[in-house]
Image 1 (spheres, rainbow, N blue to C red):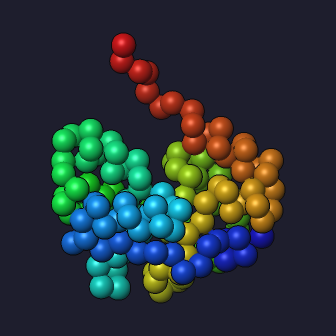
Image 2: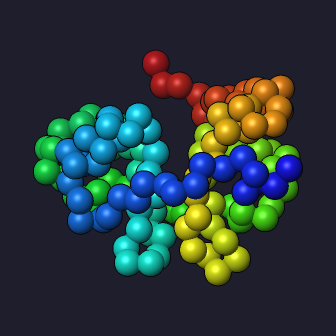
Length: 142
């Protein structure tokens, strides 16, 4: 199966100059926890509900903090014509649950998640990948 067969098309895009409150409201309304961040036609980062909680709220930042201040700038993505099994293994290896999907011109065309894999293809493969995602990479500090 190809990524394009399983991905969610028409992903909501956050803008770097939007506030965390605006993005949190959109996430709540759309029942999502992940958004690619785009500046004009370029993908410049991603933001998750966890980013908002851990990078903003936990640091005492206000609701008017700009997305650009807390977004993840290291962009990881996959191509729509990639094999889903390869992408799922990559999700486990890099320990993320979702990725922006781009075409070969590197234009955003959707988002792929482990949930998409489980719903459209193989829950077993998604479960194996999820075990890689949730495996701690460092020791907790007591």
